[in-house]
Image (spheres, rainbow, N blue to C red):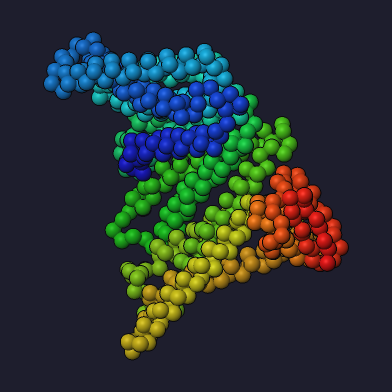
Length: 595
């Protein structure tokens, strides 16, 4: 089974990564947006302390209450609470009571601060707390429900106590969602924090839904495949598939279809194009590549002692993955086009980023394919370079993979890049866009670096063999990969260098700046008493140049100058004729003597 190790190994990791990513994004937003809109409320430091402790206390309280309710549900189901169950109950009572008491005190303090400072309800620090709690609660509910529903469908006897965790965290989520709905978002930063929460949970729900659909469809199609050829009909993974699909559709539907409705932000466009369209396309491309390798390898490298049934066994599940991921990409593309039609110009940057990312993935795939095919060609041309390949038909697997990647990479890059070039030729903004410049300079830089490294590797192998009196065609055994990378890097770097030159030539000329005649700085000397140092310092700041000082023995005192007075004297110095000025400073003022 393709998904035998997928079940609850990958999904929790994805959930944790999404939660950490969403939390990091919200916290980074809070650190960047420290303005309180002219009303500091209780202050940033106190707010961080208050809500940070409240978050920790809430997690402690929820964990304890889940253990307590779990013990009560165990007792209701007729089981005896003893041993580890009694220990869990004791810890649940202790952690739940203390954690809830501390959280209640802190939350009451937070509410009093809102009553005293109404603007505190919209403070970003408070919003960070609310959305972190909502995110942690939603992911905890989703994960615990997938376990419970899976056990329930599997018929192994779902434990009623397993409902304690989703029940407690559902209460936590509902309470904080009511607070969030009542207070709303009173700043752009708070609205962005809400979007980060909504789209993080939308993506997690979509992953659950897609995984459930892929596992379910793959298991059923695989069962049909084996039934048709060997009579074996025992689909695996159905409970997990149903649990993923049920929880995923609720989570994704509530957040994407309901909570995110009407949003026209740049973050939504990024989710549509970069995660939805590009992510789905990348996954579908991987599945398509796997299918092509399986079919191409069969005539090129039929495995000895393995039947066709065994060879093509991954096909049903991989085909379902292809259909599901292509469906994800198609849905998001249709949604993006629909929203773009309703609001022309919306999502242009996100769509552009998606296209250049797709072109980059296609080019990278094509690069790997050419490197692999060059290595195989070297192996054919020089038999002594076949050392790293094994088997009678050593070329079967690498040639199958190379042909597959060539088809996929050329198709992906060939679909997007000509359209990008055409758009750049007719639109100056497209040619000067950040996505295009990032793509071109990144590809050019990476190809140059890869080419240099591969040439060094190839030259090192040749020189080492020559110095050891062992120079022969066998050097190509280890050097064929470096040779493949070098040849491909040369082609890629030269082509993209030409594109960069073309873009530079097509760029509009910079507007000519009017020539301003430079006025040579005047040489300024001040005849001043020892008390006039502060005055000369002020004039130096106003002039932006150094004044040579000569101490007078026949004068004492010096006037004090304001900044405006110093600026006025500096302007008189600039307007004075000649290239040298002497300042005569005494207690009566400053006299300017041009020379």
